[in-house]
Image 1 (cartoon, chains in turn orange, green):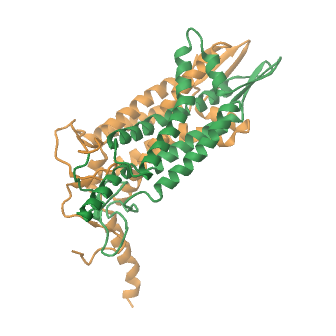
Image 2: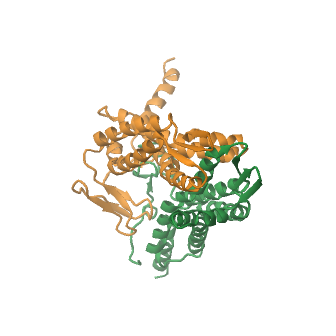
Image 3: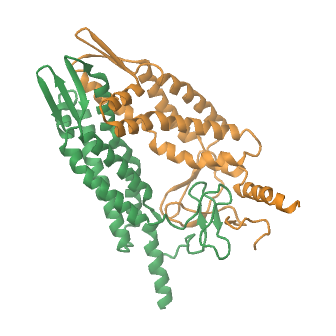
Length: 232
Length: 216
């Protein structure tokens, strides 16, 4: 039943909002209320549809603020150093990408910079903006914009992979020189733990439930743009 | 599984990939926007199989120079020496270093090739309308999705080896031409995973079911 307020481009929401379709097999089903800590899985393909994470917003905010502090430390102090025959050299996370850039591997340098520096920053930044928006009773529309792009930042943020890479590089270098572990390396270890903890404490469904619908924003825009034509 | 299970597409409903909301397109419209988060909605990812195949072919082509060309070059007073990925694995092999050597072997050589083969298998079975082993196939897809990022490890190994060993004129390390191809394999396979729509695995079963209904 179309209501006159609907924007022509927008889909109609269903009257029964407990009905969902599994994003990996499209099976229609209902998400039941489950006790905190329990998860709901797709009947057919076993994908986790929802996990009830208690006190999700407060816990995620605490973890994300801690992650922000560690991120800043990790990117402002040296990560690794070595001493060999009187030489001493240090590098930071960004320094790694910089050296590749100087050696002519600009595309790879860009990829390393994005996966190790930019994507984690976006991930932490998006989360903080989302959580800040959620401090209002009705989170504004733009919160959704960050929330639906959070997945992208998670896919490309590869700090845990980088740490493994650093470990392998250290083992190789240890044959030639004495290796010094920097503060940034330990911050990165902490950051990996925190990002995993954020992953298991953040429940996007809780935010989506409370958020202001985009459709109402579209409606407001339509009303605004048609007003001048109506006034004369 | 062959029981008649209802899917959203069969009921003319679209679920949003951004926020998960299920909604119905406006009368007459084929696709629209999510009323909650404004994401563009489609029943299935557009041209999913073609795009996945294109990325896979690209990845397979880059896989060859990635393994044949050197990823690092060590320059010492005596001369220079190039290492491919496999040579790096062999160099790491030592009484204490062998676990890391195995990790690099898995992450850099086996995971990328396994990923290409696994996705190729998924694309071919979907194209042929297979309705068998759906559960296993979707598990395979998820495994590829989770493990795939770890093949970046060699890019980071080379990055930080190059960054640290700058002891001119005694010894320095520069990246080799293979590194670019190797990074391309990782990125292209990740994009192939993103463009594959796992719902297609289940669609063949629904299509066969509705055909049966029509025949009956």
